[in-house]
Length: 158
Ligand code: RB5
Image (cartoon, rainbow, N blue to C red; front, side, top):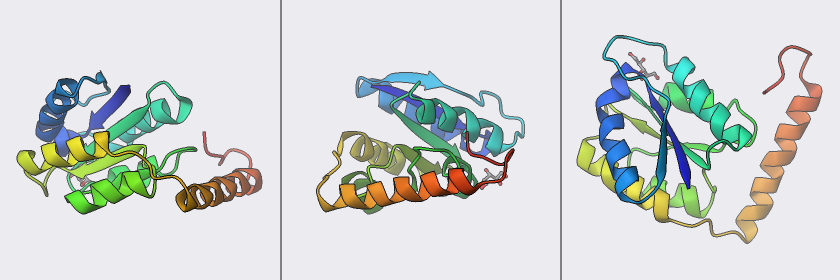
């Protein structure tokens, strides 16, 4: 499985930890930056990862900013993206079981690296439950389709 990973400056330290966890689990990592400590804008890195997952260039993504909020807002603008901000384990597990989340978002200024490692391990290895939850995801796809169809030209999702 190919995992696209990105952060802003506030998520960089945690991103480095997360990359080693994901590699240790045997997955292929595509690092979309940032890779320097200077201040950057989270939408630039959120876009790269979300675009890769949305287009199928990566199977799943992980995004990290200070709180995880900005990256979540960015990622959920993209078609086919179900991004879940999970700064604790229960949400990480449920976001896979019920929501089939394909992007995990973490707050680098909120959680420590040990908790982040457990969250990533849980999120990467928990399957989607399917069943009634598939119907709900289908409703989300229909909403997305209506939004794209109704959006004014030039303001459509990629
Ligand atoms: C950067 O200071 C911070 O605003 C960003 O990392 C993130 O928390 C935004 O939601």
